[in-house]
Length: 507
Image 1 (spheres, rainbow, N blue to C red):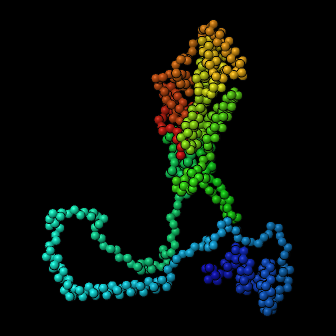
Image 2: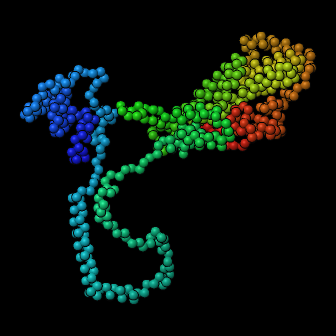
Image 3: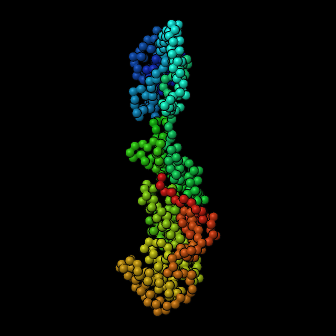
């Protein structure tokens, strides 16, 4: 509109181009005196009536339209099309304009007349008060009130029970200048913009103390601080993939209309019944099913004897657990159980590797085989551990230990199935032979009747009452204080011997 008022021909022509208005372009060219261009534009866009009118104007001025169209190639080119603005997805009647009430000159004049009438009324009231005072009524009332002597100190039995407080104190009525809003007509009149809201990512960090939520909001620094405070994480390099995944998985990119960029839309986890507003929380990329699939893979590799692959699978679950947000208490309990499962299996696999390293030391390999059976494994995997320990003890002529492992093996429920019939026969024979020999060739640091935990550094038993330090995250045990302040050998994340709140799994 301002371009039209200023007579900006080029600006008007650009607007007509952007809007795809061919008739307006022809009109602007005609008004600016570019009749040949106006004629060509009208012919190209099929505006025959306008073309005939412009042809008459050209011929009246002594010109001719012959040969104008021959200079142009009217054959359609490849990928050529009429320039049109993009069609809006949502059509509204007056979008993007909005009615704004502004003060006009008539409003100013009306307000001036009203103010003048009010001033006349106030002057008349002042004159009437002056007449009352001149008549003497003012002095009479004043002298009558003085005779009553109503001092605050002479209240008698009435007392002063009426304590109105500061809120009821006498205040002067503020005089409002009705012309104040009209002094500067160009300032702060009409529509007022509403207060700006906060983006969802700014609310997420306020609404949760979970590291995954802070990572989703882009607050990597605060997420790392939470992990260090809650589970004493010191090596953050292993969590880089999970943290980046939490950030990328909380938004989705939606393409916009042609000519515009993509829109980043946040994915919320608590918007089922409606938009939560400032109480919103993000969706995270890591879920319970990711942990379950990882543990199943670890079980499968362990069953097949692929211990390195099994250890990698359980270690991956340990790295994902701190960035999994649970929905209820049952899921939180399951996450803690998965944490213990990963710790036990990683410890068992490390002991299995130590057995292979000490294959030339019969006493140490037999001890490690015994410790291997005290890891909290699944019944099917415990069967494999007891079979291995029984064979190692019998091979090294530790018949007392071999008999103990054979009894434990035969007591397992799975031994009654037909698929374990051969193993049941072998265990029975080992038990009979061991009971006949009834001696141990090598002395072992192992007492099956006592409850103990395993030192994850030295792979030695830690009996009740001994000095022990634990990992702040996975709970691995270490005897003495030699591992205090060092990174845990099981999870590789947290520092040993620091007392913290523990794993936070809920949002």
